[in-house]
Image 1 (spheres, rainbow, N blue to C red):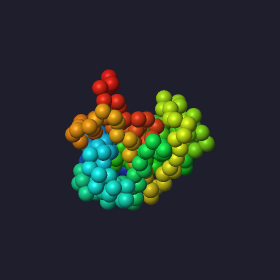
Image 2 (cartoon, rainbow, N blue to C red):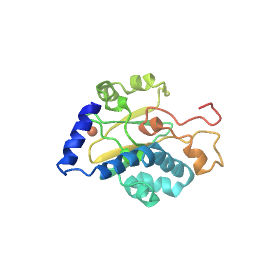
Image 3 (cartoon, protein in one colour):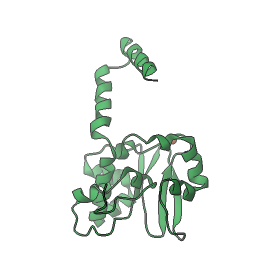
Image 4 (tube, rainbow, N blue to C red):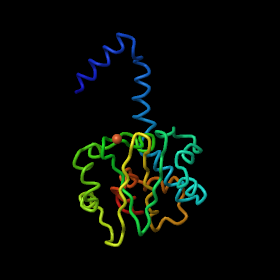
Amino acid sequence: MELRVRALESILSEKGYLDPAALDAIVQAYETKIGPHNGARVVAKAWSDPAFRQALLDDASKAVGTLGHVSRVGDHLVAVENTPDRHNMVVCTLCSCYPWEMLGLPPVWYKAAPYRSRAVKDPRGVLADFGVSLPKETEIRVWDSTAETRFLVLPMRPAGTEGWSEEQLAELVTRDSMIGTGFPKTPGAPS
Ligand code: FE
């Protein structure tokens, strides 16, 4: 695969279809700037700032845009909030649509057929495989991403974080908690 990518890259740059410097800039952006820390900052801000939380739930693309440090995600980013009554989980049943700008590159399992097919049929079973167990009464809502609409799960703020700064809170936000296949870290637990 690596060889094929390299061969394709040299042909495209030889023919002038591709600027190697532009490609390097994109790779570097994904390695250093784009990643789950962007989403973690958004979640931490929503936990600390009720007005931002509301704005995020009303129109996530717009709310995230006001932060300046992240580019827009597809055409339409939707934030879905976990509550004691409802847990949200995100999948792309067709392919692998994912809020890259918020979460970086998708994990391998997100693109894998078993996750994509089982997330809808048996969300509770999939969550159990991730070590996530929810009370029986908690409804699990599965959101199917598309090229136009991407979802960001707003997990519940962990207990014991009263008075924490946004920076401290962001440290607790895991990638999987923003996909709905995990929880944020517990304060004080070994990471
Ligand atoms: Fe997709």
